[in-house]
Image: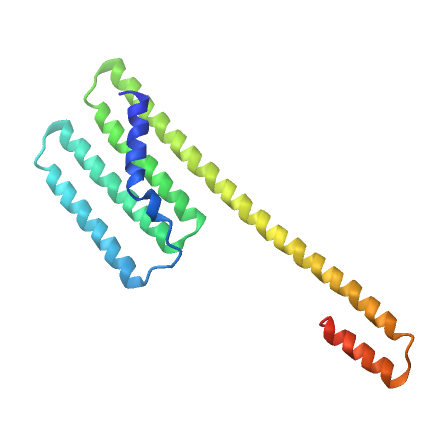
Length: 195
């Protein structure tokens, strides 16, 4: 089996739901989640049952494909339900695992060195896909951290500016006396959110 065939298999397993799996931002209701999980399980059982009509390695490949689709379906469901980086990364990992399961079973049709090479290619494709998923998750986490640090820095800067403007406003009140000064300071405190 050529490495490009394995890569195509990885793409095919991910293509079915990758475009829509993570588009929804709304969390699912508990009932909707359970119904979807039950649907995935029912599809897996039906696919596995259909594999029993086959024999030999074709049956093994069919069962590996059914299991892979179940893994991907459940991972996509979790990613859709949470909308966070970890489940999205887990879904990509599930695609890599599913592709590997099928590719490894297909290698059983070969013998000798050709089989060994096929298994190594399948494992390499899995390792690459998992490495990409891990890298993307780290980038997403880093971007999230950077966004939080940027927001905190802007908040700190705004507070510093507000404090400086407050000090200037209070200083302007220093040229006044009595009730006018008190009113000026009170106004400055209200304007700049000071107690």
